Every structure is written in C-alpha cells, then in structure tokens.
Image (cartoon, rainbow, N blue to C red; front, side, top):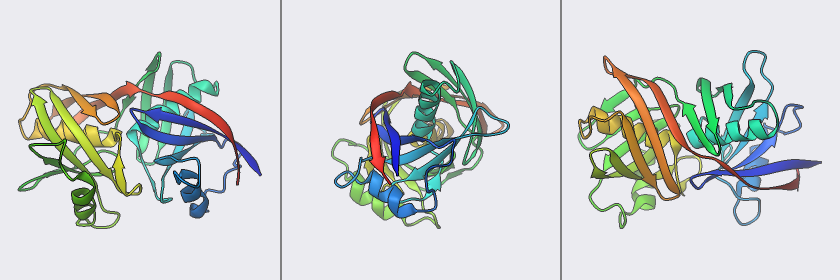
Length: 256
C-alpha cells in the first residue's frame, strides 16, 4: 500500500507526518516506523507523527520516536499544528490531544506557539535537574558546550534513569536570559538538532536554579533558536509556551 507522507522540520528536529484520519497506518508495527525513520534506508527522521480524528479536539497527535516508542514531542507538536493547517483541519489556532494531554497552539506565518503542560515534577540533584515536560528530561550545566561530548555523556546518563530512561540536555549560559542547549534524545538514541520538551525543561530548570529571573527565555539549539515563556506559581510552572518555526520540507509517497 502506498501512503502519502509529508516531511516537516522545526529547528532541525525532523518528522515524517502522515494523515491517519482513515486509519491507514499500521501503528502496531514498530519495525515499519524504524525503517521509515532510518536515514540510510528510509525517509529519515527523528520520529513519525500521525494526525487522527478526535471527538472533542481539533485532532489527535500520535508521536513515535525513531525506535517505535510512543511519547510526546514539543517540536513535533508544533509541526503537527502546521501540518493540520495544511490539511485544512484548522486555521490559525488549534486545540489537540497528545500523549501527555491536551494542548493549545497558535500560528503566525511559520511560527508556532505551543502551550505545554504545567510543569510540577522538578527535582534538583547535586549536579543536575530533572523535569517532566511531557517526557523525561535531565538538565546539566557545562562550561564549553561546543566541544562537549554530548553523544557519549548523553547515552551514559540516559540509562541511569528508570525505564523508559531520560532525555539528556547539556546547557551553557550565554547571558541572563539566553541559554544554549544540546540534547541527546532517548528513542532516537542520538543527539538531535533541537528538542522542544528539552528546551522547555532547560528554561524551567534555569529559573528554578535562579540562574535567571526572566520568564521569557531564548534558547539557541543546533538547528536554530527557540523561545520558552512561563509563569511560576508556588513552585509550579504554568502557561508554559514553546515558540519557534515549523516548516514543510517535502512530500512524497512510500510503500508500507
């Protein structure tokens, strides 16, 4: 069976998008997901996103990592919103449901502002911070991010957490409201050019550690620049928004 796909990217985080409102995609076959995401033998992507019907929301977003594991993805969520607009499901705003619950998003040209979940699972450790921002994130400050061994250290730390493990973010402070980030993503098992839930965790962790008193944080990543804004109330971070570009790269057909 031939399936039409669309390739989207958000600051270099890339996804294969499929309109699955007629349930054409075999979601239970993780080997197909991995094959499609393979950068040598497939289309190549950090993950696959399916857009499906939902009785309450504008649409349902289902996200699979490249290894077939299901979770939530912030940049993927922003790309899903752009894709939903392309499909004519929405216009310039959306309410959708995902792995971690409901989300709201607004669109201005190719910039998508995505409301994330409230963040209250934050643990300050000796040399790191752990935060749940729709998925698990380890945040660690380093001095020289350019030459830091992100892949080696990220893979080591990723498995120190209980199943399903944790994404690992390394951070270098640029100034009071700017933090550069590189991320090792579980499920992809590699460094990615960006991670939306990751920069969200970083922004909140830096505020929690009192590295900044701003509530609008700029986060340069390998694939561009993202912004995170939030409000803090009694240790809980609310009205958390992830903002950045999401663009169509190409479309095609694949036999599955």
